[in-house]
Image 1: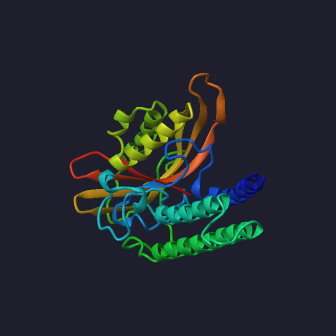
Image 2: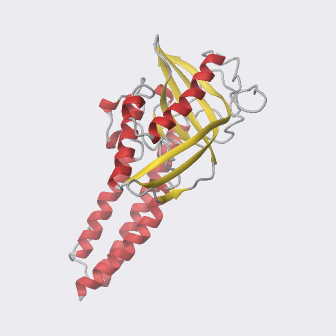
Image 3: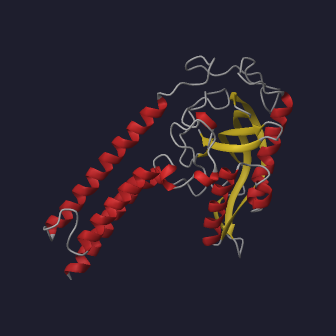
Length: 313
């Protein structure tokens, strides 16, 4: 009877923790398009600097939830160097999960980090542990954000100002800023628009081989993980009707022999997730929706542009 009561209390406490953690750790199931509605990838040495705002994306792009670039790294992240502890916030979440797990198991079996207390005192001790963990994690994440928000923006950018853009009539890319450190020409914008559609199409078809020709190994590794998660749930995400509505250049620069361009994209698409076997709708809808994201592309010297990062706005 005592064990049953403890199990019930543990489950109630765990539900409270999940309600606090899920907004930080999970994206909406409706955001099942490539990237999963979270920020993933690398922007070279500017990974931890937010791209400047633009007319298409006037807000601030979200920091990366998944990246293989380590803070202070001078170059481009690679799939071989990644891992849980190399991702911003990953270590903090791991520590929080470890302490919380220790507390839950300890209370369930009569111990805990505050050993020697039992019954109701154990429940109160667990609640205190949860409170301390939440406060500490929030403080650390706030410190982490302040640390990287303080890094300088790209050379030549006016503080707090969006790069001037000139838009075509109707839809499509603007020509970006004429004073960007790296010149992006109309054919580059055409390539970005084409890649938007091709990458979403390859994602929907679960064509990993094709994605290897369109994106960096790091981005392909995230896509592979996301597709595996869908398969484990016996689901498939179907994206169609991708159409660029508006886009402009946030910044462009060169690192060694590699060119980078971060562009804001507002596009329409139909995004739905269905059961793999029956086709029953799980999330999303047949109605088109609009999405605004910042995509970063890189181009090694003599090679083609490929997707390096997706950031939510």
